[in-house]
Length: 127
Image 1 (tube, rainbow, N blue to C red):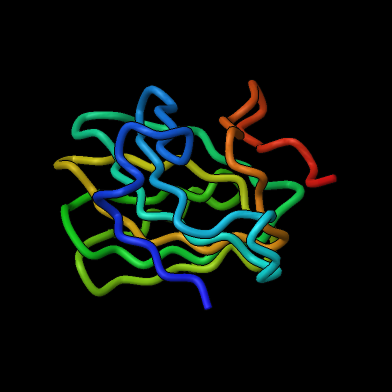
Image 2 (cartoon, rainbow, N blue to C red):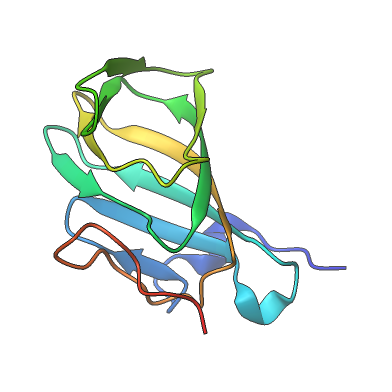
């Protein structure tokens, strides 16, 4: 059994600052669960280009207001507490935070822990 408290991750290598966001990584590939689990803050007033070509991601908003814009269709989806979206088709998108967003994110395959978005908006493939 794995038990962790968010407060114990702050300031460690499991807290990754990606510029527009800070990801507190509760479960990683080394935990051998087959997925990773993150508590992520998206900074207010930011826009982040994301394209997880190598991962599937599910996101559940628990705080804040923002929107997701699909790059392929231009569809804009409002994001607020209680909204979940799953990038089941590796959808390229822009994530905009009007206020600070707090998101619970699950990645499959699990990430290793130090990933940040590359120029194309993706994390590198999991090894």
